[in-house]
Image: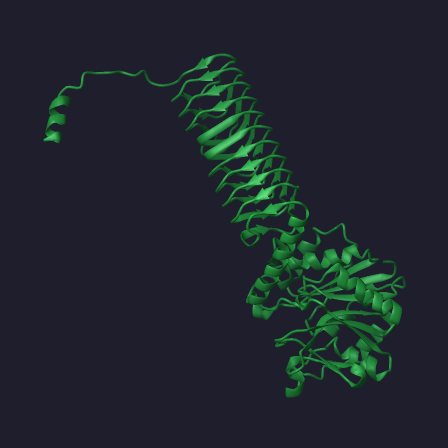
Amino acid sequence: MTGLAVIVLAAGQGKRMKTTLPKVLHPVAGVPMLRYVLDVAQRLQPDVIIPVIGHGREQVREFLATQQHLPLTIVEQPEQRGTGDALMVTKSAVDDRIRTILILNGDVPLLTDETIKRLLSIQEHEQPSVTMLTASIPNPKGYGRVVRSEGNRVSKIVEEADASPEERKILEINAGTYVSTPSFLYSALGAIQPKNAQKEFYLTDTIEIAVAKGKGVAALLLDDPAEAHGVNSRADLANVEGVMRWRIRERIMAGGVTLVDPQSTYIDYAVEIGQDTVVYPHTALEGATTVGERCVIRSGVRIADSMLGCAVTILDSSVISDSHIRDEVVVGPFAHLRPGSVLEQKSKVGNFVEMKKTVLGRGSKASHLSYLGDSRIGRDVNIGAGTVTCNYDGTQKHETIIGDGTFVGSNTALVAPVKIGSGALIAAGSTITNDVSPDELGIARSKQVNKPAKGLKRKRKQVSS
């Protein structure tokens, strides 16, 4: 939207959260709650987004540095002296291009695009001094109340600490979202005084100024009051998390994905899942995970920041992080894929197999009870049960390389650095410390010796008696 500036208030401490982390950085469905507000702002295509930071400014700056695709101009509020003061510090960041200012709160992550567009539309067509967002809720404790005069016009907003007993009975609350013009907003902010219980400069006082000047105030009452839910406590955070996660589930299911038990399926904000995939109960898909089409994810699975191709099956109680799984792969049950694991097409990792920084080639299998770390494994390789790549010498990690078509027998230890050539056969129970050439048999174990069992019959007889 041409001529639009979006100001995001993100300077507050959040004392009731009892935390050292800036309130706006607390995660909701896997990302800082501030991310939702910035994303809504960006979809409006404004000329500039102006985050106001204060408490925990260095941590907030660090997060904002990851959002370089946004047209950000960051300003600091040196002292937290109220929302009015926070807005005053933005004046120098609003240039002559800007005709409309939208004010959002960094701790109100549930606002939708549709609501913001309606608010902007009212401002554009009715052209009041201020257009504000309100909500009617059964328990308005902690919120500023919207006081209306004759004709149902908004006359002022009174904060709860300053409200009379009658005003506290009002159920309509201030949602903290406004649209105004630069000329009115900064003029009104210059006129407000900290005449309240908190001794702060309240943005809400600009409403009373607009009414007194006969400028007019428009209000949009939310259809869904949950959108106005701000985060001021851990309980608020949990409530917002629940609403957001349900929205995510609805979006995923609308895309053609089956969630067998949506309520027990936890899907983060940035996760993408292809159609005809089935996700069973008690699963968690986290971070920037992407899942292709026609996959099956069984119960008890946790997948974080990983890429799954199409027709992948993840069996019960497997844990996967920072890994890449290509088409038609089977993982689990009880498998653990640690960062840097790559499973090529039609490979298999079975029960109680752990992988780390390892490539498992197309059609290769590690079906049971193995550890594969810092390894490159070729195509059509069989890794027998109990195989371990011994990658750490106490000082540094070393690589194991296994060529195409190799058969590694059960209970084998491959002491890195070591290279097994294509088509080689490693005998079960071997400890391999030297390279094995292609098509060779590698065997490294003590010769079996059978001796007469002297006295064995007598001992058996004693036990049985």
